Length: 144
Image (cartoon, rainbow, N blue to C red; front, side):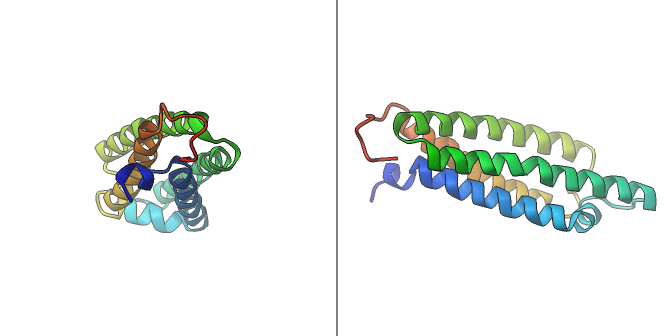
């Protein structure tokens, strides 16, 4: 099995969508835990605000997960590969920007932020690479 066959756009989209939906669900269900671990020395009011933002971020992630599943199940071939590559690139830029801005404000310095960032970054990078490797695939190919 070669690298290109491992980097199947459909599998990476579905896997990435499932990871995103699982994390978003966790974030929506336990926003206070994430807020407490991501920020240090918060007043009660600041914790309420941070908790609300964590919940909002969880909801923000749901459409991305659903998008990945829809593209993975409803498209194929070169179209799927190109949407996969562009989605991965867009999410990678978005994620890097988000974590850079958040870290500059002290977010995640006391919690698991860098670990989650690495997991999502590698998953999103995999999605982008999978799409890019199959960008010019033959429509008759059964690769994706």
